[in-house]
Image (cartoon, rainbow, N blue to C red; front, top):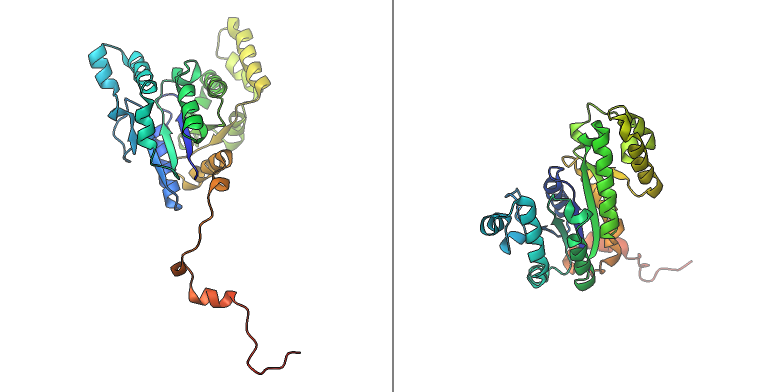
Length: 286
């Protein structure tokens, strides 16, 4: 039995749902079984139907209406409600014993940067339900055009890595949007954050922030934890490359049980070729 899950994280608008749908489609196209689990109580209907949907338990719209909360407070309330009703989640995903589950998470980054809600959920999935988990944090590629925004995204990715304490990959999504503005050589500086990009930050900020900029960039460089994988969700080979990293991290292949081939799956001609040739009756062996 192999229970594998990937938590898809990142700020709002980075393409999490698009990536989830592309990943689901790719996994199914190569003959594996996968399902979407929606953990966003404010999610909009998409191309693919969710196998498990938090909105069947609680929705942001209902919370905002009944509790008079704003969107952020309502979302936090929804997750606190989920954490107090984990038996519902256990029952919903309990039947998927040999499956790949894609958890589409909300875009409120407070949930996985400094509020211990998602870390508690990840711990429950791995320790109580036996999932081998991987976190995938998305940052949209257009951030690289605005260097201060890019480094703030790197810091949020690093914060999520530290707080979640899960095997982790970071993804630079929506590459198709910058292919005409950023060369491949320039892009490499952003896939592995380069401290020399600091000069570009200082040129666009007030001098009184230079020391702060230096400290943040130095922190990122000292930790050396954040690197990005490029993603174009419209390209199957790009999605397949991301899946290969997830499979390596979760050890998906090693956890698969060997399956006996069915008799009808064996072609008679192939079987004949596999068998050694028999000497003719009465023949002389040399």
